[in-house]
Image 1 (cartoon, rainbow, N blue to C red):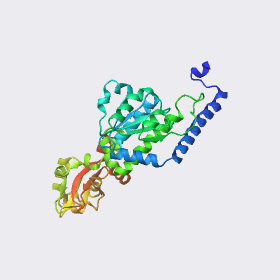
Image 2 (cartoon, helix red, strand yellow; image 1 turned 30 degrees about the vertical axis):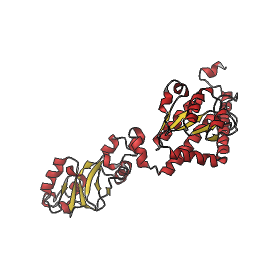
Image 3 (spheres, helix red, strand yellow; image 1 turned 90 degrees about the vertical axis):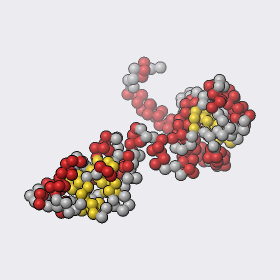
Length: 330
């Protein structure tokens, strides 16, 4: 091993070679995925039918790199509407088989299909008629023969230089897990609103947050009639402290008064009514819209607040730009 490389200093003549190796790996793995795509068919549809019919969870299991990939597949399934859990086969042999019920489906991963650690959980699934789906490269392996349906990995070389480190095979397994999860999402009619339920925190949760979750409720809105004098309107606007005033007529929002409107009518403000000062037909948004959409409208229109209205145009809330930013909406 080159000491310069160990120290993190790639020699000039090695840079092109390093990039070439990276390109070779990506090409090798992408070719394997293309091979796997070309083999999609009846076994995959059968696997989808089994997973869709499961009344319990998908129990994903595997050892080593297959186990790491299995954990990710279980997490992807669980977050996209298919209840799933990873169970380590060694732990299963020491009591965790009790986690697997007759309502579940076992998804076992083994590139060779001969992983001895899987023996107990595979036997358990056969004993209690628990559906078993295998992801393996060898159809006639022990795992492939035991499974109700076998999803084959492509006959493709590992991308590592010595041809043995799991690289191509783990990429293909991960892609197969993603393909199963997305197909199930489609069949279940899983939507963005469902996804947000499983991702309430972090960036994903913020991006999928609805206006209703951030808006000021109807009971606290600064609303006045169009005929009200601005002397009284200013009192309401100041008391609420939102920097805006909504004008309603017949229960509908007909106008909005902002700081900009106050400045434009400064000379005659105290002799005016709310209706004459307000900007008519203000921009609004629905409560079930994404907060990110509200933020986009406010940024584009260069406003700091947006009234939320129902289907009849009645004000039901108010969302402010800093509430969106504080919640991480961007």
